[in-house]
Image 1: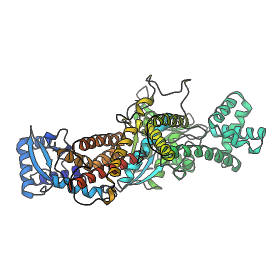
Image 2: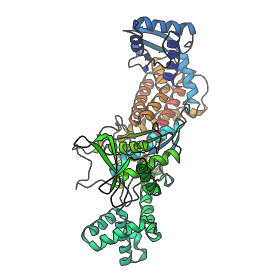
Image 3: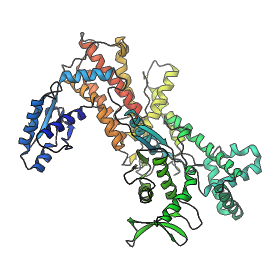
Length: 582
């Protein structure tokens, strides 16, 4: 049940009947205070101004039309004009009760699968032969939460892990792998690649100081790019080893990426020559000092002239821009995407605009093809600087998760419980990984945030442990009652203001998810769940459940059951695990 959409539809119809052009938005918003109703129609003033009429008189005409059509009968109890033309909307209690009851017994919690786009979501994107670090965390878990939400609303989502698995560095890496094997035996490659970060560092150091090795590396690049089987076999070894390590981290994080979602830069390599040739034939790419360049009027250099974007170097090599043009074409015409969403940090913003701009200029994708780049801020330490180790090194993602487990273990061991060892380990893992993810997802992705172990592992405030405990607290009511929530019968009855507030909050779940998906802001969902937990606490304090007489007891248990289901589903869309007991 999307109350906002329902009200918007009825108000829009009423406005059409009083002379407003179709498509005008009544601007239905959730009210900030109960005295202003449950919702407000805030669009009357703007529409009245365009029509040149008095806003309050116009609002009254809309109310008269709604009263005459009776379309809101049984949905609202009262409509009133406030201030210069706002309309306060007070919902009907029986309508809320029936809607909550329908949501509770529906596996989608009353949320319709109303969206049917095919959406390619490009996120995570690690590099081959480099270990994932904290810089990969935000794009990975924000992208994954948005993917989960889009799918829940009915979209077909294609996950794209655009890994860096092609380029000149692979000549160096293959040459070093070959050298290591020749010195240590054919079966030594696993040992060499066990610490892939050091492997890359050692290869680069040798490349910089040994000209013969550097020359061999350059030759290997040419052989690799020309399809030499021996080079390709070594390249695949590097890619497979890296992605095995990445997959282990995805599994630990509860991220839904899998090997089949990998779409590396190498996938588009066969397309790059045709991309350049097409741009040349159209006169969009011109030669400049031996390189092929596309000049874009919307981007200027320091002299105020159109900026040249290189798509092929003077040595014949291609650039990331060329690859991303091909990737856009592949997503539209091979994957049949309706739109594309990309998650990378803000430093890639101009690059994406340039690549996608050329893709549209060259006709590789239609002009109206929607490609959206969602950026995110940085993870900072308590000193306000980028999060690093004490020695100043980049924090490896695996090390971060290990420390989370250690800290969560100490935290849970301090709390008295009758949990079995298996249950305790499940709680530790849920709290540890949940805390790391929720600390990020509960912040606006557009801003930097401070990574603070003490705050994120607290059982107070808007944190994963608090939200996970809030869920188990609701579930414990059913254990005390000795009933299964799924077996409850009877009608939900709403008499108390706290029952009403809880029902309204529960029924606003779909509105929250639509906003979360549209804006790609998981913090919207995190805030909703935190507020829901607070509304439930007030309900639990003021509305006795287990000591209430029937049918009130059964009604309140059903509200509690819907609360638990909503918390669990919402946390799952954030990628946060719940446990039944803590």
